[in-house]
Image (cartoon, rainbow, N blue to C red; front, side, top):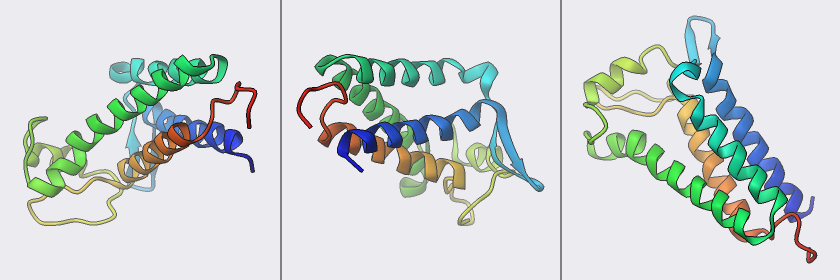
Length: 145
């Protein structure tokens, strides 16, 4: 698989995974992710637009999409991993986070400490893969391979 195809596939997988959060997915009595279309639809539109900009423009789209991905990861880090690492944060309190995600599929649990659920762990890994694919792989419309 060439580098350009990998970048496009990695970003499409990320967008498809994120799309699950718009409508939610329940497996048995637990959620992989609860639907949030009403409140967060714009956060699906933005990465689609920046990704299309990456595909159809030469250099500027690459930087726009990479900038969005990095900001998205930073936001996710402070919303999730920060609480796991430091036990508190500035985006709500730990008890509310634990309570909010209690019906989601958990990989690990720690008493009194928030640990990201399965959906968010996979989302964060996919964002990192997308960042790497865009940062080190040439723009898909460039003439060089």
